[in-house]
Image (cartoon, rainbow, N blue to C red; front, side, top):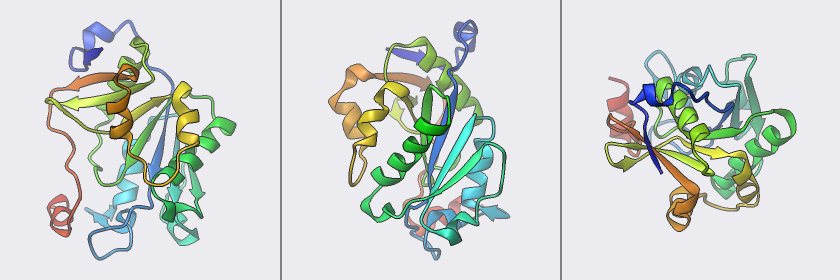
Length: 207
């Protein structure tokens, strides 16, 4: 199943599902800072800029390494910070921590998994992904940018138990390839958000 999110009129009769985001703020930086969260993005921290782009979601769960990292997150009514002592295990650990909190404390139908290595998230894309997810009968919705899959991935609530049991490095793409029947692709007519893989990528982002 595939939706073109630029064909907004086709989805106007479908309201978006209620959504939250889990922001994985534990990722090691290729630049001078310890984590990507601490790297500058213009006049602010990269983590701050990403959380701002998620402001319209019902809940934003930011998973960090320690108390010092938690202080980087600016307070907001819909923002929760979780310190994950198991972060060194891999990305599965912060996703588990975020889903555990959402399961107990929030009433949402789907969650975006947001990584800081692709920070240029477009709020419009989030809205239309939520609409596409509501119109589908699949467990996972992924944006497809000009024929290339990207992020953030939207996980329906029925698939959360599988991620709550995940360990080590989380390979969502591998899961999607193994179970294509679970996946709805929402086509985006633009280039995917730039990835931060090297120190040069960080410099390019700051321009």
